[in-house]
Each structure stands twice: as C-alpha cells, then as structure tokens.
Length: 315
Figure 1 (cartoon, one colour):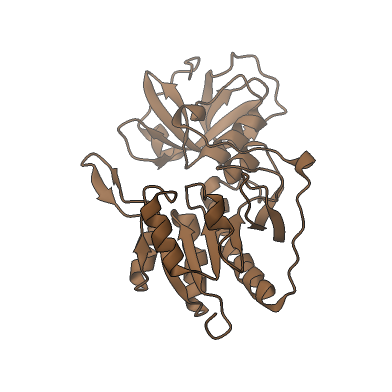
Figure 2 (cartoon, one colour; figure 1 turned 120 degrees about the vertical axis):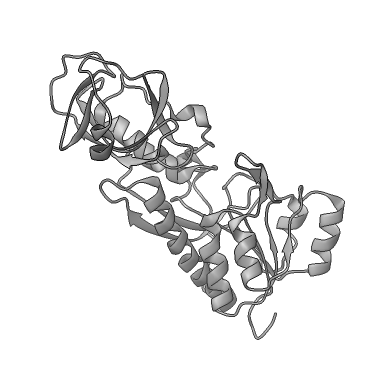
C-alpha cells in the first residue's frame, strides 16, 4: 500500500477502458503497470496500431506490458515481481488464469457494462440495445474463473435513452464505469463494500458479434430492426445491400403501426423522415447511411445523389 492507496495493476485495451485508467491517475492511485493487448496491424497499409489504453498510459508515463498470452511463463514471472495489491480489469481481452486472479491481497475487480447477471459476455451494450432494453448499467465485480460470474461489489443503473445508439451508450457507460470503479476501490479500502453473489439462474449471455451478424433481416418487425441498427450501429455495423453494394445503416426510425402491403425490404418512398423501407411489420426509415466506397452521410444528403426506384428491394 502507498499512502493508504493500493498499488494497482491496470489491465485494459479499448477506448472503453480509458476513462477508468485516467480517473485512477487523476486521483493519484499508484498504477504500477498497465497491461494491454499487443499492437495490431490495421488499415490498408497494415500499420501497427497501439491500443487506446497504451496511448493513455504512455501519456502519463506509465509502464506498459503487452503480452500475447498472460498465461505465458515470462509474463507470470513479471507479474509476480510487480506484486500488485489489486488488479483492475476493464475490457482487457484475455482470460486471466486462476493464479493471477487469486494473487492480489485486495482482489481482482472488473468493470462490466451491464446489470449482471444479465448480459454476461463480450458484447453487453450491443445486446442490451438489440433487445430493446429500457435500462442498463455498470457492475463492478470481484472476479472469479467464470465468465462475468463473480460476486457483485457495486452496481449502478441508468436508463437507455430513446434513440440511443451504441456509440452514445458506450461513452456514457465508460464514464459511469470509471466513477463506480473509484467508489468501489474506496469502499474496499474502507471495508464498506460487501460481496453479493450473483443469482446464476437469472444469467443471460451477450456473445461477441461478428461482421456477418450485422445483416439486417427486413422480415423482422420495424421496431426490432431499429433496435438492431442501434445495437450494431458502430461495432460490428448494421448493413444491407443496394444494387449489389453494401449499404451500412447507422440510424433508423420505426413506423410500426402502419399496415404493410409491400414485401419486406422493398423501397417504398423517400421524404423528410428518410428512405422508407417495408419491414415484416411496419416501416423503417433510414436516417444515416454509407454506401460502399462512399462517405457516411445523413439520408437527406444521400438522397440528393441517389435516384431511388419505388419497388426496388434491399437485401
């Protein structure tokens, strides 16, 4: 312990993890190291790109470790030498072995963006939006060897706003998660936080989504399609096909009380509300799109350069 603050080993990788790391630094917690995924090649040039957490750590002069496998003997040796009081894990991207989880005297805590035991897994924010949930939240969990199955230390609920997309929810929960993490660490140090076992009978899963999972099924009800688009609007992306090209959809609106005569996926019309598409029940208005090889644009701009033909089908 340093000045009654635990020596923390931080483990995280994507943008979601950064607010938690930044807040620990701001509150002068001794972050003795930052473990993140190795640099990965991206883009057409396949240039190596650092993770957002690595970039944040380097801005603050923190030591960075990038093991391909945390189970590798060489990393385990480094870990034992660090001897952290606590591990904080926020969307790291690797499963920790039991000897790492059980090592720190003040535990290994995880920031998870759902109200556990609901939406255990890699994509809780996506699935909460896809399922049309009206609320979600953040859980700070005492880690065990299972998948998001450890005891709950702190949980905070927040409503999902009407029309909220993945990017907006992601940013809100990243900040909320950091705030909840800080309160949890303070509570653990003060002895005011207690561990509450999860009710495993209520668990639901949020498996990782792949690119091909983003294909819009127009035979679904309009409201379900809009939830689907919201949940996949950024990662991995919701899409359909127009004239043999991929059309990404970032935002949509439903008119689900209207009777539908057209086949699902049929372009019905265009106007101020957007490009109107028949669904399995009701209509969907596309509001924000990107056609293959073109830039992303609001539907009003897209329609200025797109001569739509009523009756044409998306698929």
